[in-house]
Image (cartoon, rainbow, N blue to C red; front, side):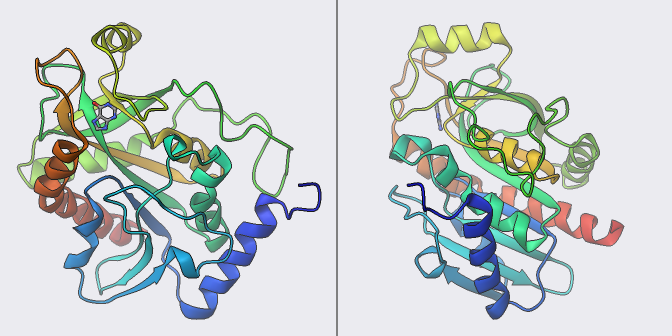
Length: 280
Ligand code: HPA
């Protein structure tokens, strides 16, 4: 372990390998959550690099996560899409979970859009609803920034007052309104999984101020803020959280709801990126 290259060195090496294949790199990136991977396939001009071909990238294991870094370059939309992410519940350390974000940092990405399948805790956050994240609660019991301090990655004690950029939230709500797409606002609670929550845990999360619950997003958001990126988060409510409805929760249901909602989330993200590029 002692001789292992630092996170920065590994991310930098990975970024350099990417630069060789992609000369012009976008400043915006999107992480696609469970069941949402197909969102990128609507773009005609794209180059996909399998994670397996990227130096130091962890190996994805979970169903519904393809594992490609996809570069989209249309006249109006230029972005890097991460098709598939790494989860803590798979056994990955948070350093691996957030490694792709460090690579994006080394590639010069300035805006990160995170997407995730979630359980809805409030009745207003019903299955099929899209939620723009206003804040999060880290219930993992660990922080992705724990470890030796490396000033090349960011400061030691980063502020997390505004993890989700308020300007980007306003832009997202405005764009959703323009598209006549219902978009709620909400707080995301991140639990380790892989078991879904008990009804008592969901009641606790509701008391704590959470609106949606999931098993991802938060480590990536923390690292992206640490890296100085502007972060926007979209949660798709794929199911009512445990105890909110009588029905048991299944991964198949989550993936299916993800697939169903992919076109509308895709259109919203596309609209946001178009407006981002034109305001840059
Ligand atoms: N709980 C946690 N993670 C999830 C859920 C849920 O109900 N649905 C989709 N991801």
